[in-house]
Image (cartoon, rainbow, N blue to C red; front, side):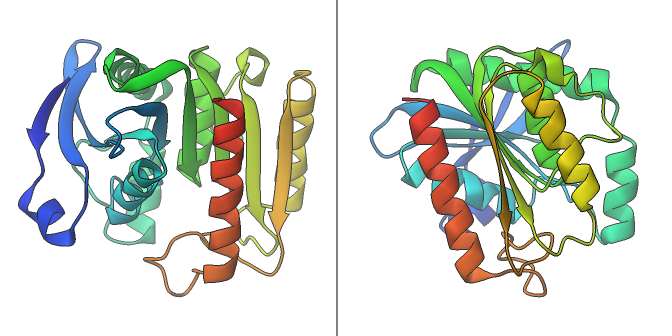
Length: 240
């Protein structure tokens, strides 16, 4: 794994991670990697949402690193950042399972091969589209032992849930304007059919995107703190 070093913007924002490149099939891919102060920790793959590898995703990696994890967020958009909701939806719709799967496989391999990565099992985490991609990555790789899916549901992506061997924590918003209760229940039924551990948590009184502190119209500090605490407890228990 080649580190390109922190960009000027990362340094200015006080972020602790670095922009990196890693092998993903026949090409090199980019991502953001944040390591714990202890120098080693359990690995976590962070799949970005439909906006791209934005500041919030990088912040999540840094927060995980401060909690003792080695966190890598691959850039699925090759440097592009969506400018508005319509643009974000169009870029996300253009993604295709095979190239995205190859890129996620490469990110998993990069984490596993990093000497700072402890243990065999990895975590995977994502928000919205990223939550679905975390499930997608876990269905492709038995190295992922735990998935945290924030308000991501399955329609529209080829996630073979029967191949998913990881424990799953799904966290959803009660008043989600993008994910219906029926879609959430469909995901829960699919996960339950595997015979593996899973839990669906519905946060009362909040809307889709409530974890994103860069979206003041959606962000809920108390609910976000509860979601983060649940995430850390789950990852620590499943990756112990």
